[in-house]
Amino acid sequence: MSAPAQTSSGAAAEARPLAHPGIALLVLVTCQLMVALDGNAMNIALPTIQQDLDFSPTNLAWVANAYTLTFGGLLLLGGRAGDILGRRRLFILGIVVFTLASLLGGVAQTDEWLLGARILQGLGAAFAAPGTLALIATNFAEGKARDRALGAVTAAYGLSVVLGMILGGVLTAWLGWRSVLFINVPIGAVLVVLTPRFVNESARHPGRFDLAGALTSTLGIAAVVYGFIHAASTSWTAGTTVVALVGGVVLLSAFVLIESRAEQPVLPLRLFRDRNRSGSYSNILLLSAPLVGASFLSTLFLQNVLGYGALRAGLAFLPMCAGLFIGGGVASGLLRRTGAKPLILFGTALIIIGSAWLTQLSVDSTYAAGILGPMVLLGMGPGFAFTALNQAILSGVPQSDAGAASGFLESMQWGGGALGLAVLVAVFGTASQSAAREPHPGLAPDLVQRIVLADGMATAFIAGAVLAAAGFIITVTVIRRRRAAAEPEAALPTVEPALP
Image (tube, rainbow, N blue to C red; front, side, top):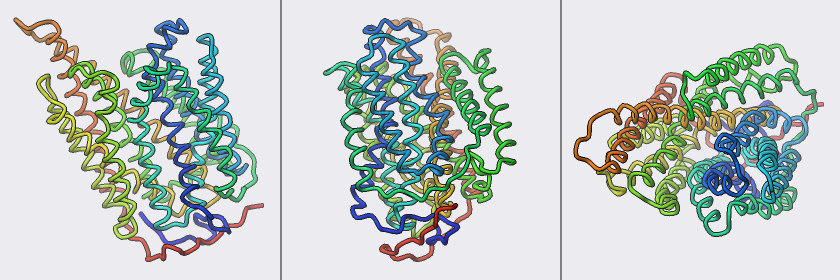
């Protein structure tokens, strides 16, 4: 969905245009890449961290989970806080907290020390990440400039999934696991210096925090994300998984009830009156799932079936990176002519085809024949779809709600990744157990193990295709096609005054 520049009730940017829009976009995209990349990079370093800090196998998972739960749980609060306190102000504060927490984690001497630092990193990321999209909505005029900016953010999100594995492997192998955290320090410091110089502050919308809504949304989202994480490591029927998911649903139901009555809600329900925005939020959740799940299982296939090393496996994802950049770039150029719906449909179709292609994997598959093509499609598909979805969500959002809208978008994206990982890993585990029970007379144990893994992964990718197909159906039935009004690229948006 595209829309012309808004009046005071719509999305707006600042009165003065950006003096250096390229640098401003680089700052915002770099922040998005840094906070999203951190989780993937640290996952590669987990075995080394376990040896160095004497983590127990149970506690080791919390190096990743502490960051995921804090980040995901606080995104809505972080987005709304930016609306009230100033988005650039909170964006900078989030980067400062994230950077200091990275330094603290890099010098950690105990497992408790590192876990505390990871929680603080998640807190900083939850304040900074919603500001990325919200500041794009208020710094770039609705039209070609914003479409290009959203294409760059889309590429950064997808790139973080792949680059995290590459960077984590390289840094851990060459400089040790602490370098994965230390690298955030100079990057964060540069962002703190550049942001006030090149990114305009948004109008503040003073108000009171919806504490009840903030509490139920934070606990509810954290419980659901934890349920997905626990399901991936155990099963969907495990007691802890069921309690977490049911508890999360109850809390989120209470959150919706609270928001419907709150004077200044954390997540204004008026955002969902637009069916295009509601459908796009659903698609962000569904389409993030196969991207993250496929990246994880493809890594296992490359290393455990094809025998690739960690670095070679990471480099094997470069075609996906190329696909993301191509898809996002082409989509941002087409949005004003086609509107969002055709691009969402096309991108989703590519994700379905790429996921279905991966269901044909076997122990005899090669990288060129079995992995390369799907990776290109699973890069281009999100590049097209996410660029259009981001635009559909942010188009026409009142400036007072831009932070909340962006925070919920990030929550759907983050939750979708956790959902995809849980669903695909659960299907993989069940299918692998079934394949292991089949007889393989005369075959070497190592070959049997690779056959079982390949069969399980091929079956799991069916789930990814089904999730993407659900997104395709939502696009067809819910999202309406709206062509953008002609808009000169250099036109300045109108300005919404700050509310008293």
